[in-house]
Image (cartoon, rainbow, N blue to C red):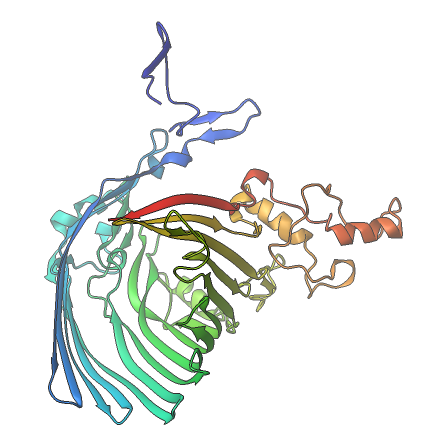
Length: 522
């Protein structure tokens, strides 16, 4: 908004229409503009130092031993904030400087005997927040407005606890016939909580603390099992089928605390979430050969997630009892199968007629990358009916990308000419960005005809169904005396009844995109 450009002598202007104006303005139609749209600022710097080393030794014809050590040291210098020149209540900051580190070591023995292969491993993970952290009561006065800026100077400190975990790993492959095998994998895996969960300290401009981290969070742990079968077909194709299960515990999640008069209200994380993932995977691949390679994969997967304990705590016992009386919403898992394919067609070297020493048809390649995924479930419950959850589904999504390339070798220079086409079929998918506000989104949902609705509203629409831009909006009302049966059927057939998002220019954000390039290798 600084007037720094002088297009006409003596007249200075800013960079409009680029950027945003920090203060609120009223447009010619009375609409409020600017203000909240340009608040985010970030001057953070993050540096990471890593060491990694492996040693492999073949002890005898049966045993290959591998050991490794890795270390990571982080420097988080976080300076993130929002800044509004017109509204102090929109200003908040998140500033901290921490130096956590983690160390990992592993030992693995690969055992081979007459086609039987077993990988036995053990991994040790150790991590430390390398910090002292604030010891605050659940409803501490330092969490209030006017006091939060004193936390660093007045709050007592205590050394954080380190985490360590020993993870066993096992992988077994056993031949059944000359062309097939069974395999089994089992392992424990750990993941450190994100830095936002461990070190965050967010405050409003008046000092009110809205969230504070917990550097003593335990590892998120995953215990994974997989049982599979592979079969080689005609010496060129590989058929795979496997079932898997992952038990994930100690995932971090936020818990809200509110004191008696509401002057303290903030979030703090705990290891209170869990997730179960189970699925079946089928694959067909061709990894070698002439003219064609690729794979096709289909995965049927079901995920269940939830939490332990409570997500809200109140100092007021009446509010706490009221919260605990609410029946927790039970969610049934919905399968979201997906499929992927990567197909490559190519010509061999020295193929076709030669011209000035170059075979024009050799090393031509066309690659297709395709994917499909069943639509996600969400909740549409305008009447707030108890127990209604995940009652509507998004449309299934699919996409195909293409790459066409030609490789050349000129003396010592390797050249590749390529063309990438993203969203080859120019498939359109509805974007949330097209809705001007939540009311616009609800109007769209209200216009759809879902399969659980009765009467004239009954249909088979899903979220993501759209009305063609060339079709004018007409609400479907069988009681309208001005509409004939043919008119009503036309409205249904053309989906003229769908109330599309107001921001039409943001409704579809994934147009077909073509990229050309040349890759040179010396």
